[in-house]
Length: 309
Image 1 (cartoon, rainbow, N blue to C red):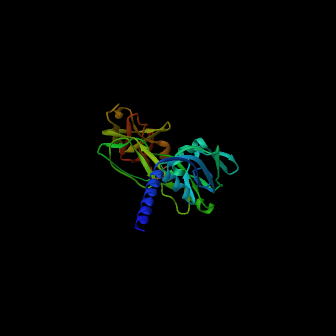
Image 2: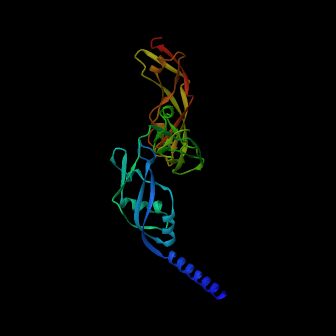
Image 3: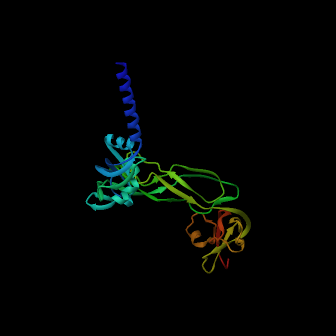
């Protein structure tokens, strides 16, 4: 009896070793997996309303093929909208050659798809209420001394599509990014920012890319006379004070001295529309290389008189 027990134990161990060895080797077989598609097709639901069984001739270890065979339920696979071609009605299809790029998502890691047993797979994406709204960046930027923003902060995409109940998306006019908080900025900057998704809706994108240009600058100070413009013949318009202190923020190295190009002035037409006789001091267009201009005072008192008075 003991001999039989030993014999059966050896047989069991041998069979186990053989089975483990055999399953660890690469095998080629036909396997199937049920797939639900996710995508970002404009105006359509984010997930297909049906599941498609995909069959393919695959090479993988015996363990991996056995795991696929025993798997139950559907696998959700995200497809690029560029790979899904509209075929008919609510159906969008993808070719078997394009599916090869999604083999790992469909069957799992360690599986090489030799070929699919079909030419195309079609999924149904039903229409969904939607609305396109702009993306507004929320930023908190701190620059290294003598560095400043040289361009607008741009986001890509600059708009997203909001999906959801019509009464909800009707109240949404824009979508905001999470706060872009950066410090010690001293060079051109880019990155990614996630979007704040309003409650009860879905967004076509969950994040955006942002970028902006940064420049080193120097400040030039000048005292400039305040001119008057558009004054009709026979009228004299005087400003008090008659000069303004101007600070030019210029890109370093300086291209040109703006003090000899940019003038300050008040406009008679604006004075005519003023009840108090106060006018905003304005400046000429800034030349290339000048980022901004600060004027003090920003508002002056103006007095009108006739030439013969």
